[in-house]
Image (cartoon, rainbow, N blue to C red; front, side, top):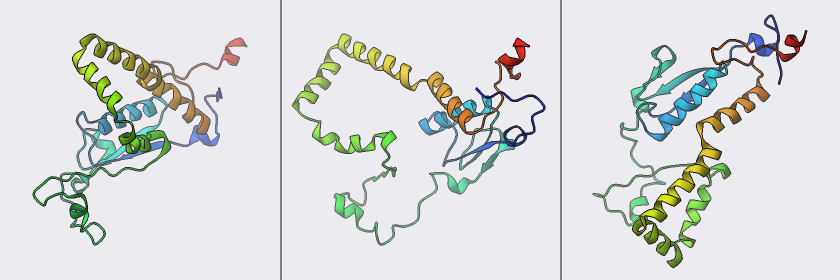
Length: 191
């Protein structure tokens, strides 16, 4: 761990670090909003101030820029030539809702697994799904197992620990104690 004295004049100790979050909405209890605020909280504990830009906000007003046009409730532009026949191609009628969630296919998200899901929806998978729905104990066991796995690898504490390590490797900041006071350098304590 890199410790810097209180009077350090290095780049990392004299530079203010900020993070910016841009979204259609950072408000309510949707996944994006909750994850954004969770990440901002971890960054704040590391001394990194967060700023927000969105069409709807429930964030500190002094660090937020509200742009109502950015909200997803505002109608998108009319389809261009590329998208003009998408409803017809998918057999979607004009009076039917068509919701498209654009996403990037990147390895860590595992999107390709969802795309390949058709190959796994077979008779065995259907029977397992039926068992989960019919057998309450089996369902509870599955939920408990999945919760324990998720807690070990995807919990807030794990996120905070991993992210703190990444931040420290990129921009070492003084370690803070739970009362936001700089931690003592163990070498200084030995003197």
